[in-house]
Image (cartoon, rainbow, N blue to C red; front, top):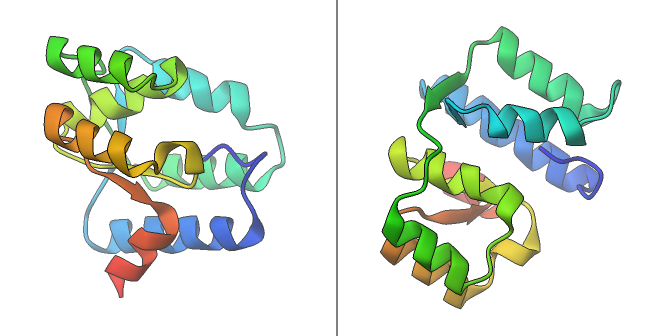
Length: 136
């Protein structure tokens, strides 16, 4: 939901993804430790699309809290692929919540990295646009 980099098309795809998730009874995973919510607070400026979407999801009670603590095997994998430390709680929450990491950020869509994280952490990484295609 970091909107400083997202295009209009990416915002639209995110909205479609969240609507699909809501219709299917799916949730947005966050960590008990609060790192994900803190990341949103740091990156979502007031009166932006991302902040408004975040507030909307809160009102819909779409957030589900799970552990954001990395397993040893996943930590080793994330270290090896030089995964951004600020994004690691998303992988951990997805791992513990048996979910996926849905992102528009191209830095996370490198196939070797995606494959390693899927294999060693058990977390698929999906592009927001690809997710929209899977929904149809």
